[in-house]
Image (cartoon, rainbow, N blue to C red; front, side, top):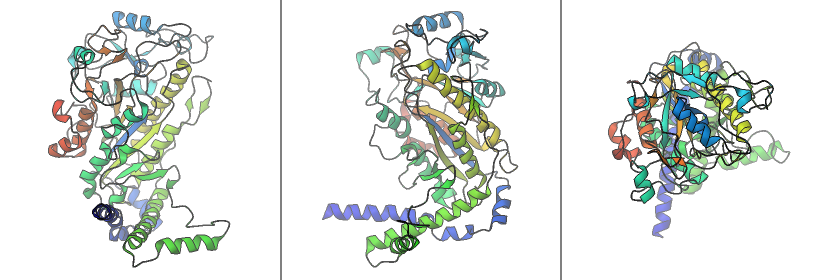
Length: 494
């Protein structure tokens, strides 16, 4: 009986959060469409948003950002040139061979050079750098100072040297190399089964700044542990807007009467405690959906262009950019839905490139670059307001991949490089020591993979500080933060 009572209390506590977050506060948002249109165009000096762009499968970042000085590039080429299909990209300035196989290194031409400022991590300044040949938008934004590179990042418990790794003398994250566990560890700082993500936990800390707390954490890519907090629940949306409770409108079993009857049953008041709270939650959800949908419908932004698909040469719609479009429309509706601080989640799969990597990854990183370029474009004008200083996007993935090729792909690794993008970014920089591409001989390699030097805790804390989370609360959200730098410096103050 004691266990049952504890579960009951937890249910009521959680339910009351959902119910209360869209209760009386929803009334002021019953605006007509003309009012919503006016709200979209207002300025928002006190608005901030974080976007996590997740790459499911483990992105091979060694072919996304790489060293190009003579010694580094020679070692990279040697290690990645394996029969039957080399995955080594070609040096900067190499002219594309239009007669080569589509998406092959020869067809793509040389990697695109970068010119870092080298003030953030001076240890990187002895080398030169580039990005994948199809990432022109990333190259341009890096040069414009609105994109930075986070070098060799990954989940860590404590800093780990090669000697400590090989001797197994210090703790490391659980289940390295497991997709599900490392996706969870990036998003929630623990293996599969952890229920609260660090994005949702940040939402817990700042939700009180929103008039309507229901719209604090929003996923545009289904259920994601990153977006789930203890009291902040992820609100799931799609390209058409809010996800509705099915069966309550239109027809059910080919009957409008059935839909009406079901709605009356699940929304009716009830003397039973659980049933009463359930109907309250349903009613609040219906009200929240109506509020959100009206504001979302009134918010319009420029649509993304198509991207060029390296493996075919044709243009196609980019689903990742379309998710960013949805985020932008929600941001455009910020005043109407009572939001000043929001956390978003978007994602794309397909990065488990064990085979056929040249073709597959070229298409994937082309979509990444195109989506990031669109992000910068659309944020520059949302309802007539430049929101680039207010919104920061960062990338994440299960893990990096092995240094060596398996013949036409790569296998599961650990550390990897990532991007952070936005007007608040101290861009044109590489943060963290960029690893040496030396197979199991340099300080940065172990078991054919990079050993991370930049921890997820540090990345999250730097973003959280910019977002307004107190230093004390950052230590609560990121349990290993005391072992690492608290601020990597890639975001401007304020």
